[in-house]
Image 1: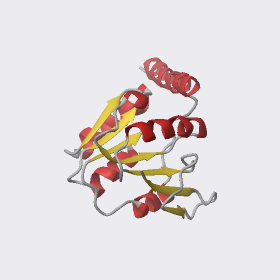
Image 2 (image 1 turned 30 degrees about the vertical axis):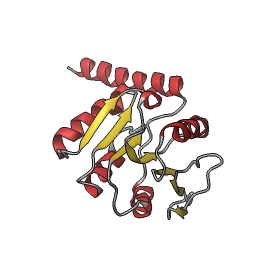
Image 3 (image 1 turned 90 degrees about the vertical axis):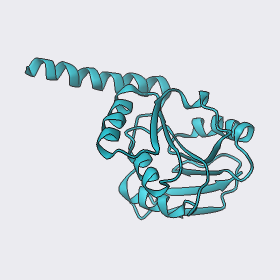
Image 4 (image 1 turned 180 degrees about the horizontal axis):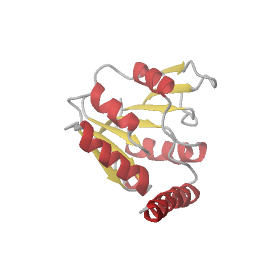
Length: 173
């Protein structure tokens, strides 16, 4: 039994490492202090779909589902272990407005989206800038923490009260 547990944990760790190397980012949860500030910067009312690009373990997606109960919340994650953990947590928390998809978020069409949330890395933000400009409707909100959308001027920037004073950017196309 212990051997099986070691094999499962080792396999899960290996899968996380492989996907992290392939996609250039590890599935890192948003810290509680940053999440609190991120939820503070969000618009009070959203009419439409909310998408968490690279939803990781789902912690931010659950907070979004709670904040916007009348909106469809979509968490998109490619890495299988965080994705399956999100699905398990979704069975526990049971937000009817929340779905998780296991796929590359660059393949997800954003035309129906009213709010995009992301915590990615600089190269991804470069690529997403093009996707946002091609797909988002005017007035769509984008919130990113830690890394800005290159060339976009935020409507508002907050800094989390953490060690890094993590910046959180609110944009509107």
